Image (tube, rainbow, N blue to C red; front, side, top):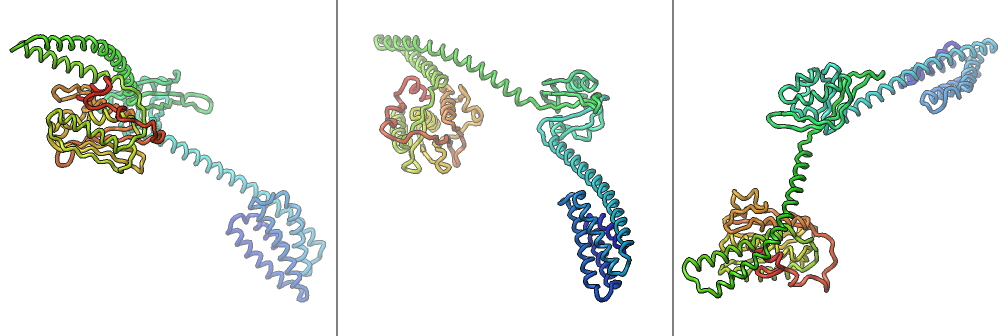
Amino acid sequence: MACLLHGLGILKTISHRTLGRVVLLVALTAVAVLAWHYAPQDSSGLGLLGTLTALALSIGLGWMADLGRWSGRAILPLQMVIDVLAVVLVATFAGQKTSNVILLGVAGTLAEFGLWHYFQRIQGFEDSEQKSRRRVQKALWEMRNIIDNIRSGLLTIDTGGVVVRVNPACCRILEMEESDLIGCRLEDVCRGGMEQMVDVILPVARGEAPVDRGEALIKRMGRELPLGLNVNHVTAPGGRIIGAICIFTDLTREKEMTARVRENDRLAAIGELAASIAHEIRNPLASIRGSVEMLADDLDLEGDHAALMTLILKESSRVNTIINDFLAYSRMRPTNRRRFRAREFGDEISLQIRQHVAAKNGRVNLHCDVQPEDMELVADPGQLTQLTLNLVINACEAMHYQGDLGLNLRLLAAGTSQELVITDDGPGIDEDIRQDMFTPFATNKEGGTGLGLAIVQRIAAAHGGRVRAEDRPGGGTVFRVRWPVVHVPELGQDGPRATDRPSAEAAEPEQAEALLV
């Protein structure tokens, strides 16, 4: 019986998993049956109860230690006492000599705990090894995930120049498959346009100094591709260089942006110079025109002389218009947003348009619509008037001042943006000018300066918005100007007046003369 009990204890030491605990419960049942069979009839109940209680306590303590709830060393003395008590109870109620049983119980318990300690150490080593393996696998997975998802290309080679690893961004930038790179010599895969890349990477792999912010120009599929490279050593644990790692990016957009900024700076300088020249030309031109007008009034010219005088006045007027348009475009004043009623704005604009059409002896049916009726516009009144008149006059000229013209003001996106829509039933947008219609000085209109739509776009951009032109179903053109609503003080006594906005025929010099283009 004592041997059976200690065998049960040995089973307890390896019962770390569900299967081991099932085996332990089966063995515990066998002990109970044997105790019931060998115990005297008058005390079998008490013996069985004591034995099972001791065994249950011993097994419970072992399981708590296995689960990490209690320290194995802390419960070792208590578990030894309980195991010895279990042996004594079994032997006593089975009629064995107590002194011999106690010695056997102590020896068996010590052997049991020696095995328990041995198995615990083995289990600890196994658990530590599994945890280390899981940590390594997790670290490798995270590193691979990072490498695969960075937007920069990554390429590693050994000291012989053989490609060891690449990431998807490297394959995308170089326009090559991973199978065409891994295991191949870098010199071989970079032939035919990528030799500069080899000249930067290979020396580092062979021990030369790392490269920081290097550049290489490669050719792929008939186009040049500028690359920015950072190359560093790959070292073994002892510090020995075993290769190189290169991280590179496509600098095409950065180069284009740099070139665009330089071009903008150059154009800005030229624009400032041209604006100064135009301003200086305008004053003597006004004197020349005034003098010619006085001569035309005093002289009685006929035939070719009269035609030449008319031509001088006409062309001087056109030159003056070009200069004023250019100054309006290059020296646009800062935007001063205000809140004003859309219906009043629409009525005033409609009146100016009708007067302009009448002066041209045209027949234009104007339809002005404001939705909602009580909408308040948030914009610079003068600039919005200039923008609207430029679009309307362009539309009238496209229709030769004959047809239907629509002017609509709308509140969009739950009140977060506003839109001005100008529609006409003219011939539509000429395909030759569609792509460049908002570019300064681009025009196919006789006598036009090419600055009207450029001014419209600049005003829209100053309001944080944009302008879009599209063909109208059934013929004609639609211009949409949309801009966001920003917070400004509520409409009050200091709101804009009609005099705040230029008219189509007369307004501030820097604005009015830029309208009729």
